[in-house]
Image (tube, rainbow, N blue to C red; front, side, top):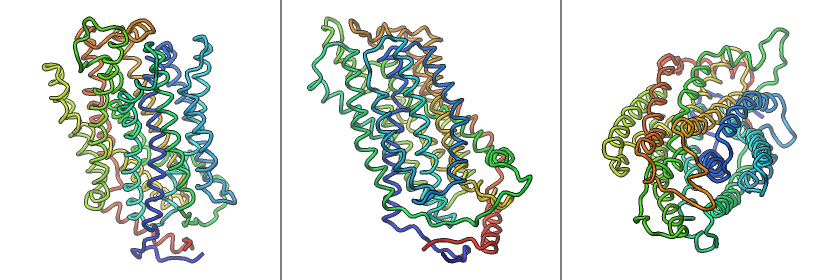
Length: 502
């Protein structure tokens, strides 16, 4: 180990290491998207679990996460294994995540009450194990390099591939509409959907876990903070979090932006109940009608997911350059307000024309903040950790990542809760829409129900974008304040014998 001049523009992360970490994020993105984008449809429309049960499960699981995520942050920050501080969790969590993701979509033959217990246990366990993987993984940029600019580049580049991973399950879902009818021999809509989800889940897990685990063998923990014993009366990690105003503003922004997940999470529901794109269903047999509606659902959902992917990925791919030239705070506020404006156009056009294709350009703009927030929020949390290190002498890397993980999972859960609440508010009965003996198309519903479901991907995400921009007006780590903080921190680290492994 040797002390480094942290004011010098030295870089530490080579191209291969950057790519391997980013591809690991891609694998992780695949698995998270398999849960966050599909679990609500699977529970509600395939397993026909009671709407109130799904709502309570999502809420109570997130309450547990409020304890679980910070707890994981404390464990990671306080302990270093003989294999490293953050890296070992990549291996520890891989197999349990793979198994639980498959169990989540296994569709066991159980009575409804037993199925509810099974689903609750698997869902909560999945969230806990995912936390064990997520918190350390996204804490790694802090110890891959001490260079704040390089750290931001690692985050922005890896988020590009994380976004690609998030899109891959949708590609599998779209392809399944053409391939699976050739191999699944059943006319039962419920049985077909159960098999479809299980096949897609197994495919995602097989690819995603390999990409995720591969990163372990190619990344290096370099940054070694000086060992510091806790002084008597020193605030705890949680206390430091609650006293850090900039970090609390980022957390509040993340919570208020939860609606941004709707475009992806609600897409399958909107595809089922807001639009039908296909041939006239009159006179079709149940098997023909099932196939036609399934094809329409796949097409409509793919349109929304492609909008999300293009908007989000397009923003993410430009973020490394934008983050070098523009202030994070201004970038976030500007794109969120643009997303809100686009949502108004999406809503108005959807109401007056009921034509999905006319809405596409504005849905694309709506989805730009997804990529911006996903990238900037974690980079800004790292800046908050710099601020905490400068003002308190402590750097809680994993706790910062735990805050990000909690906000992401809370946002995903609130999206699902919002979908369930909409079902309940408009009197939608999923078991009558998709059963073993009948299947209904969106065209068979009143138009006000079509539009109510459509609002989940139009005005609801837009209002969320508007709300989340408000805390950012008060965020202090930007412009000259940020430059001054980084200079002071570099000098403080050098004086304290901060070290970096070659």
